[in-house]
Amino acid sequence: MINSGDTAWVLISFALVILMTPALGFFYGGMVRKKNILSTLMLSVALLVLISVQWVLFGYSLAFGPDKGGLIGSLGWFGLNNIPAIEAGYAPTIPHMAFILFQLAFAVITPALISGAFVERISFAGFLLFTLVWSTFVYAPVAHWIWGIGGWLRTMGALDFAGGAVVHITAGVSALALALVVGKRKGYGKVPMEPSNIPLTVLGAFLLWFGWFGFNGGSALSAGPLAASTIMATNTAGAAAGLTWMIISWVHKRPSVLGLATGAIVGLAAVTPASGYVSPLSAMVIGSVAAILSYYMIIFRMKIKFDESLDVFACHGVGGIWGVLATGLFAQKAINPAGANGLFFGNPGQLGIQALTALVVVVFSFVVSYIMAKIIDAMFKLRVGENEEDVGLDISQHGESAY
Amino acid sequence: MDMKKIEAIIRIEKLEEVRVALEAEGFIGMTVTEVKGRGAQKGIMLEWRAGEYRVEFLPKLKIELIVDTFDAERAIKAIEETARTGKPGDGKIFVSSVDNVIRVRTGERGEKAL
Image 1 (spheres, each protein chain N blue to C red):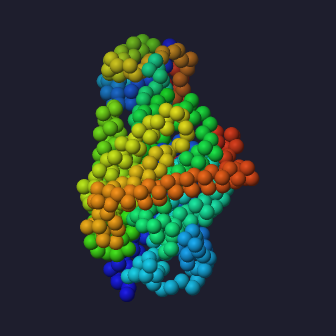
Image 2: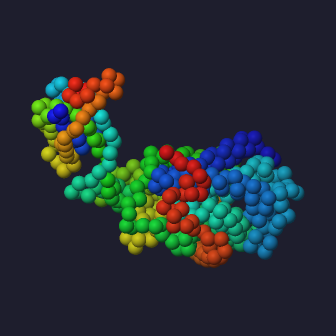
Image 3: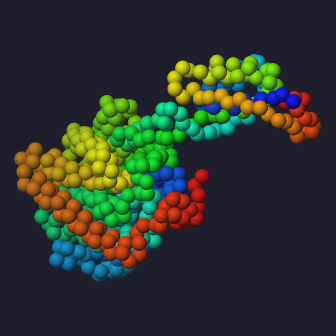
């Protein structure tokens, strides 16, 4: 039975999550040099147009279509043909099309997250090709395993409310693989790389925060108590993480705005898989711990001079892995009867399932991304020429100038 | 013709104080440019998401004015005294000789064009 309140909420959530992709572009764009800000924005917004088409054609069918052996969906829903009007296994009270739209927004932003790893040096054509392949061979299968009816991790009881594994681990770990293949920016560690516009980054971060209410809250797929408690967990974790990050940076020297914004994003990423299963106080712990782990991962990453430029791994990879594990610690059936209890609520087995889920997704995302990036790089070059990199990608890739 | 060009690199936030002091001494006209530069401090450290990064060139302002040599010391003094905080980064003043000045509107030459 279609419920109009549920339907309205999911459609609004779809719009909220769509806003997150350009927001991510601004979040990243403000942190790169002036000559690459348009290129960085483009890496996000181009995926809105590319993946929106891919999703309708075959992305949704592969991820959520009729199950093939627990591993992948069939192409039976190619072009969104022959889809049932309501798919009760996903969302019994809203039109199937609303669910497809909502999931589309996730499929768009996930590969955009990866772009932070290789900004300021990626070839735009290589990027589009890589993303198309990645969305098809990494995102679709992982989404199917964890969220698709018949998916093997879903069947095993893995909990990933809004995409800690499907979105944040896949993106964070793939970012690591891509940074390895593409290599560091010319002059990294030797010449200064000044952020072009920190206010844009802050704007992007808090538009992401805003969109996250749709991302997590909409994942309740209903407009009721579960959506409310999910949004409370989401806001609390983002706040706790931003606060923790601000305090750490203050203890080290000064309370940085860029730091606070980064911390908020890390907390929001970490609570994503747990948001529909945990209490506000658990969310607070999840957010704070995520901030600490991620902060020191960035320090470590900079110390070893590894140019994973905008710390997609430190923020989304670490946040996502911690969040998926934390779900196995803090989940409560009292919050969401459709979920499970975690270790702290008498069910240690759930932590095992969560750890397996995280491990499988880490290994699969890294290996497949690395191999695909190597092949595409060998055939088409993922990186621009030295002169193009010097001039900046805005001019060399897009023929435009921001300022 | 006996004129001097005074170029002063100052802190951005000192511009108004310097302008008022120069005006009080009768120096009205000047040209101000936004510039970047560095001194013995070698730039400055700013906060990154975690840790810090170095900015090699700091934003400063450059004031240029051409004065009669007879008045030069007064102008220099006005700038010097208002632009100083006593901390590194107060800037420098360069003084050089000027061969000629032409007022475009009237075609006047030399001191008359100042």
